[in-house]
Length: 333
Ligand code: AQP
Image (spheres, rainbow, N blue to C red):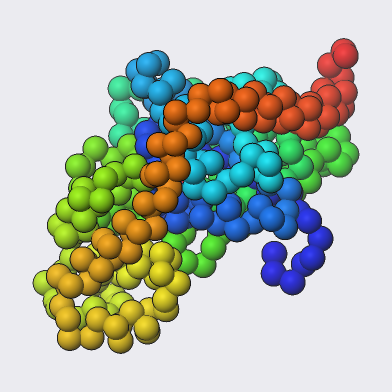
């Protein structure tokens, strides 16, 4: 996007499956916040996508409310960005069904996320899990998004959304803008502290794998102090040092220091001192978010007015594209 002055439409979503992690924050929300002054930004909680796994209804309701407040606490301002909850905007499910009919079985079968989640939940490999990318394509294409800022893991889904859009446009004329992924160079893939070979995930059940945005300072510090690293001592970025590389990435994203600066800063100090410093930097980064979240959760009326207004605006915008799709397809209006 560098060098272009014109306002772009930016859209991205996040599932409220569990409390957001530091990975979600660095890979998604921190960048979303930066984009909102100079673009038209639409951000949403992808709660329909969470139905592909089994959650307790009570838990989903609570996590949706908690995470909606968390988006605002992370700096997404309802007066700057359109923030909404996917299931409150019926155009998504409708367009999702239509686009499923323009998505091929073969391309869905190749999706890494489908393969991973099928392994994680072998007892529940449902059609929604398989068709997930079609709904995600609808989420994006309904708003004529130019860019979709995400972590590295979602790139494949954006590529399929582009393919679906091109296929549909090829058959019916220019209905959709072709979106592009927007993946920041650093922090696109934060790894689990317990197993740096795996992505940090909010649904990871390992007690020390993910750092949650609402974790108390002492818990955050404990997680960093016990972060898995190799048997070396020098804080240097390099091959075979997944744990240290991950901690350096986190520290760099939070403090805006380069790897060279970090290596210099911790030269001769060993892993212990470095882990403590990363923990402290993360605690300070998350402190205002946790405090703002606590304040917002007490103001239910404000939160409800935000998501109701968000849904209304999102419906008005997305309905234009859906109407166009239906007309092109010959559905009687
Ligand atoms: N570890 C990560 N590093 C960088 N970015 C990440 N994202 C997720 N994990 C990391 C980015 O966060 C946004 C929202 O993700 P999502 O809710 O769609 O689900 P996800 O990618 O499947 O994230 P999780 O935390 O792993 O969720 P669960 O456990 O529910 O499956 C996306 O932009 C994603 O790239």
